Image (cartoon, rainbow, N blue to C red; front, side, top):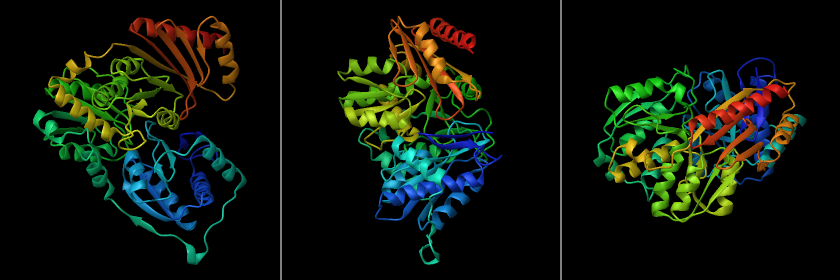
Length: 460
C-alpha cells in the first residue's frame, strides 16, 4: 500500500490503513483540505468541477469527494466520466473556483488520486500544495451548517464543449484531416479515451476508426502507461490491417503517442517534437520541455529560429517556465502536449488534432514524417525505492563519482557526457527513482543507464 503527497496531488493505492493507502478517510481529509484552501483564496463563487477516468474505484472516490465538497458549502459540477484536460477547460468555462480530477493517470488499476486545480484550471502550485498538506495535518476544516450545504449537479456537456473549442483552434484544419481519409486504430486502455477520442476523431472528419480495449471498466487490458512494451497489440493490429496509424492514450487522456503504418512506434518523445514543428511553422517563438525530454525539441526549435528552455520535471514546472519565457508550445517527453492557445495543461485531444493537421498537410505517411526528425534514443529505467534508502545521500555519492562532468542539480541529478546525458530523479507519483539517458545511439544510451544503475547497486 502507498500514499504519495506531492506536487502531482494525493495519489495512492486503494484500501489499507489511513495514511498508508488511499482510504475513504484520506479522500475526505484531503478533499476537505482543498476546500479550505479554496475558501482561503476568497473565491467569489462556490463552484468546484470534478470528473473521473474509468477506474474501478472511480465511482466510490467520486461520491466521497462530491459529498465532502457539498458538506463544505460548495456547489459541485460533476462531469462524470471525463478526461484530465476536459476537467481543466471546464473549470474556466464554468467560472469555477477550482477542480478535482479523480485519476491516477498512468498508474495501474489499484491506484487512484486527487489531482487539484486552481480557478484557472491549472494544477495548484507547490506552495499551495504545502498549504494544503498543513491544513490536512492540523485537521483545520469547517463544514457548512444545514442552510449553507452545497449542491451536486451532473453535467456531461463538457466533452462536446471541449471538442468545439479544439475545432475552433486556429491551427486545427478539419477539412484537411477529413480529406486525408485516415484509417486510425485507437488503444483506449479500458478508460475514458474510448469515449472522448472517437468523438473527437469523428468531429474532425475521420470516418475509419477502430477502438481496441474500448469497454470503460477500469480493468486495464495491459499496463496503462503508453510505453513500447505495453503497446504490442496496437502495433500488431495497425500493421496487419493496413491502418494509417495507431493512437494510444493513458487512462485520463493527457498523454499521447502514435504508431506508424508499419507497426513501428513513432516515439512517445516525438509526439511533442512533431506538434512543435507544426506550431513553429505558423507561430514563431520559444519552446519548453522538462529536462528528461529529448534534445530533438531543441533542434527543431532552433531550426525555426526560436529558443528552447528546459524545466524541472512536473507539469506545474513546465507551465511556469512556459509562461516565464512566453513559449508558444511546450510539454513533456512522455507524450504530454501543452498548447497555450488552448489551455495550460497536458491535453492528448488537442495534441491529436494538431498532429493530424500536421500530417494531413505534410501529405505523406506518418513513418515518412518521423524520418524527418533528428534521431535520438532515450533509455527509460527505474529502480524501486524502499523506505530505508536515503535518496539525498545516494545522489550526493553519484555526483561525487562524476564530479568531472557537467552536472545540474535543479531537479534530481543530471549528468552530461558531451552530447549524451543521464537524468536521475525521484518520481512525483511512484516510490521509484527514474533513470533516463539519451544518445544518438541506442546502445550508448542503454550503456549509460546500466553504468549508473550499477553504481546505485554498489552504493546500496
